[in-house]
Each structure stands twice: as structure tokens, then as C-alpha cells.
Length: 315
Image (cartoon, rainbow, N blue to C red; front, side, top):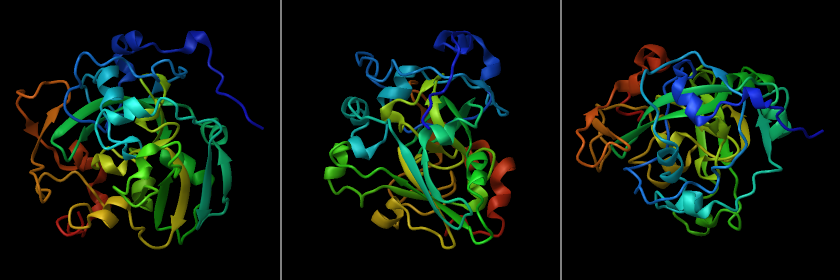
């Protein structure tokens, strides 16, 4: 039976109140974006999306989040075009209800799960994650979501589930960027089971207290704050528990530049640019860059996941 999230008016967190209530900023966050957006750009066509109840999350950066305009008008989402503003411009008619996710592989409860089935049991949490992107810029975004681990446990992965594979919707009529062979569609990403079950890894359903706009990956997307942005797969329709490491989209397309792990590592340059420093979106093109932090500042929390792994070879 289908049902909507029940949100009381008194429970809604407005963008203004969000800025005034620092206790809601509890996590370090990431977004897919680029350099600052021109001030003349209007708000996203998705700006009127439904608002969500939120409660505080357990982590904090102490950093001010980027604006709604930054977050929603400058994105990477190749399914709607390769330009940073293309997702905002081309995704307005993308319909995300009804939506379902197919769960398969090494688990006790495979099946097709409606969006409402996935979201309803979880308390939504405002989470702000620092993100260091391979293009030398970053954002701080107040994502709304819940730990991916809480969702995956419901599917009862077995002892043979060593990895988790995710797929984006493949529908060129609804996602015009898929008509161009810039990648092998549909978009595929993956994590080790330990990465997927880490409490910093989120299944995201919103931003700034509102439902996730289309250009940001509606209705469900992944956020892994110690990794580069391309690991944050959007518009997820399939989750598979696998025994073997899955091949991911960028790994298939350009294996010499994009590996499976994609950990933020300033000591390993991309073949075409340095990853040692970054610039915050909205700071201006002449603003000084800041040093990129190992694991995006989460070394204490996640370094143990890669004990004994050569992060230069396993990039």
C-alpha cells in the first residue's frame, strides 16, 4: 500500500530557521558542483518541492553551508547533460513518483521496494558533509537522509555479500543525456560492504529540509563524504549485494583516471590535474584555495577500512 510521509506544519524546518538553528548542522557534507553560479540564474524549478521533517544528526563540521542556489543550480548529473548547469535546466519535467528500487543478490530479502517502503521506517536527519571534488572545488550541503546501513540491514545481506552495487535509472526519454554515449549507460557505482555499512554513508532523500530536487538526484541518491563526488550515484533504481567487486561506470570508461575506491587523497594526483588543494563554491575564482584533507577530513573515522591497502594503486 502506497503512503506519503506525514509531516506536520509545526515540524517543518524552513531555510531561514535552518541557518538560525546551528544544532541542525550535525555532519560534514558533499555535493556535486563546480565554480560559482552566476547571480542571474533563477531558483531551480524544483525549489517548491515538499518539505520534510528533520532531526539532528551525530556529526558536525562547524562550516556554514552553501546557499540553495549553489546547491541546486551547479551539478554533475550526466543523465541530464554534461554542463554543470544542464541538470538544473533539463530535469524540470523528470517525474519521480511512482518510484521503486529492485534489491537482489546475496541477501535474505530481495524484491521490489517502493520509495515509500524504503523511506517510511527511517527518521530523516539533516546532515552536512564536507566534500573535496576532483575539479578543485567543494561545497557544504545540508543533506537530509539516513544511514545507508539502516536500509541495507533490512534486506539481510548474507556472509557472501562483500560489495554493494548501485544502478541509476536508464530511460533516455526521461533522461536526455543518456542519448549521448558519454558513458556506458546506465550509471553504475559500488562500495565494499564495510564502506556501505559505515555510519557516515547516507541514503539521501532531501536537502535544506526539502525533498531532493531532480537535479540533485531525486528521489534517492548516495552520499559518501570521504570519497570524490562521482561515487554519489543518483536516482537509484537497483541495489545488488555481490561477492565480487563490481565494475563502475567511470572505472569502465577511463580506468586510468578513475578507480573503484575514489577516496579523497591529496597525495595522489589525477592524471590531468592536482588534487592537493580545492576552492569552495561561491568563494569566487580569485579566492585562495585550501589544502585538500586526506579522506576529506575523516581519516580518524574511515582509515581503518583500508588497512594494508596501497591507496596509490587502489585509487
